[in-house]
Length: 101
Image (cartoon, rainbow, N blue to C red; front, top):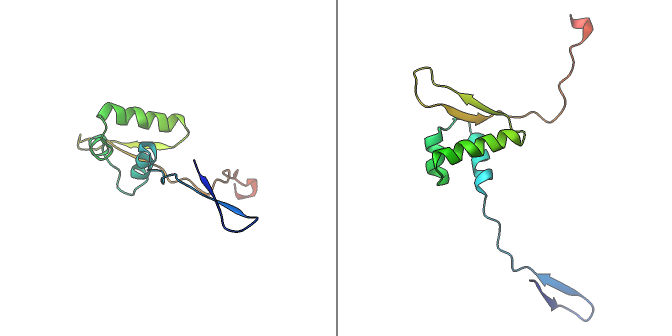
């Protein structure tokens, strides 16, 4: 809890005793999936200290939360990679103009 300190006869300031928040695993997963090079489940599991099934469950949770997670399967039969598609500025897509058709 913060302790009040007085710096004058009528003013009181509070100093915070909270530590800065450590990055959550969810945010670390989002950051990893947002990078240009898509990681595999094995790479994510190692970097996040999770089991592979937990990584897949977390990816599923991101999808349920509305993130556009894309699965990229290797054409040579290697491990699939995952990435979050970069979202636009948040504007709704425009309907095609009838005059352009």
